[in-house]
Amino acid sequence: MAKSRRDMIEEMLADSPEDAELRYMLAMEYVSTGDDGGAVRCFQELIQATPSYPPAYHQGGRALQRLNRIAEARALLLQGIPIAQKQGDHHAAGEMAELLQTLE
Image: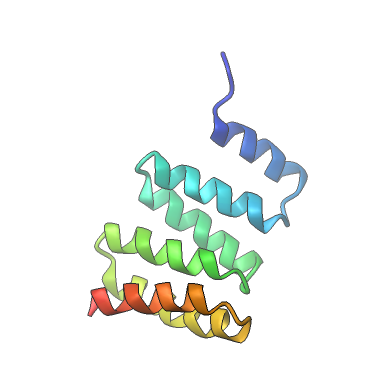
C-alpha cells in the first residue's frame, strides 16, 4: 500500500523535528482532509516550537474559526499579527487582521 502524503511528511518530521516548514505542511494536510481539530493541534505544536512563524497563526485561526472556537481564533490572531509586523511581513499581518475583523 502506498504511503499517504501525511505519512511521508510525518516520517520526514521524525528525522527533522525542528523543521517549521514540515510542521506547517503536516498541519495543512489535516486541513485538506477536513480534520480541523488535528490541524489546530499541529499549528499549536508549530507555534510552540517556532513562535515566529506567521502562517501558523493565520491558518490556525482559520481552523479555529471553522471549529467555531471564535475566542481562541481571535486570541491566536492577536498574538500572530504583531509577530508578522515585527518581521516586516505586512501581507500576513493584513490577512490576519482581515480574518480578525470577520470574527468580530
